[in-house]
Image (spheres, rainbow, N blue to C red):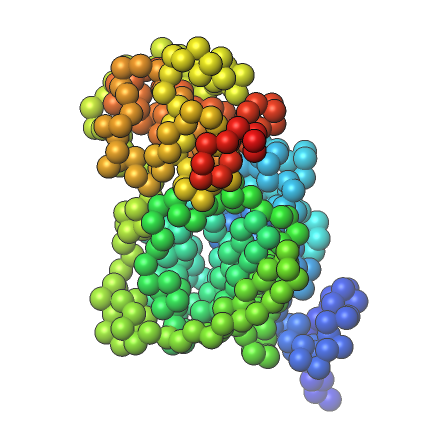
Length: 399
């Protein structure tokens, strides 16, 4: 008597239990869960968006998660980047993420890419994945990920966050791309990063979880995605709305006659600030530390020894500024560099000290070895309860 081999089960008994609440959904079932386990999702960034997205994709049983991130865990990350914990500070984010996700679900294989995504490595990294979830926080990477996904025919789930707000959409092959929605990047400095503008951590959680949901729908082939719709979430007003957008037949990447057919220099395309203000001539190492704390800065300013330069944007300047400062937005530094002394001390500041550090270093490269950056920016200044001005006119402490 011939014995017919019994077919292997689609799921193990443990998997049946782990995913029980998903399996009973008619849009998932046993076959849908198997499909998730066989799927591969790439997350660009293990930060505010990538953290909740990765957690819910892992918990849902997406079998392979790739994570691209070149950073290490910092204390400032922890209020929103829920993949990481206090004991992870200093560790590469991909290592921290891998440990957390494998603790959540041992079914999931985590592939870490401890690197920055570039035009040189994007195709190689993205090509093996079914869906890409973009959690990057800068425009060069956004355009790079978009163009690579279009050229490789990969669905892209995109989101962005700032302050109390978030936006999300989905780009499906043949239905438009990021460039259809945003043909050109904003001027450098016009849109602050979360480090400069701030973010409520729970907003990152909301939007990242939404990205995970959209990715799962794409993998299962169920429901209506956010393709050709931009969802806008205003947490402060508890308002959610969506705006329709359409594919642009003239899009240079996904249009009928594309003119961009290979990856380009995205930093140059976006005019990344600070990249071109350094001269090519090398100079001696600076004799003094670049960063000074607010108390040191105040002492220099009070003695009348230094110029004080605010490199934020106008909308930041009117909110609060250090008395006596001159506003030269970082986006205008190259055109207005002659307005800054190269012979006397210069104290530069921004919101938290990132943009101003770049400008101060550029001034040193130009020959001013007494250019200083206020570490922590005006946020640190205010924390010390030093005087500030507000509004378009000169007022001290609101008076």
